[in-house]
Amino acid sequence: MGESGRTVHRVWIGPDGVPQKAELIRSSGYRRLDQASYDAVMGWRYVPGKRGGVPELMAVEVPIVWDLPN
Image (cartoon, rainbow, N blue to C red; front, side, top):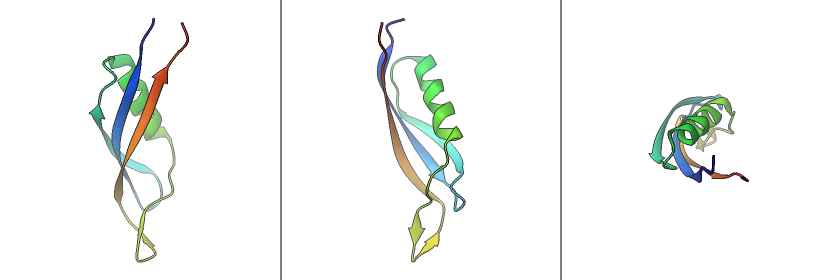
């Protein structure tokens, strides 16, 4: 389909490493790729952020580059 681009989601990671929510902060320009990147970041598990050695809810920006062969 010739779609390519870069998405960036801000993902809030819980103390257990499970994503709590995500918001699209940079679109690829294609709804299909934006949705696929959302599904991916919400399906991954993360190493939680820590403050004072204690895991807590923190946000991180996750970029995904879509460069698919034709």
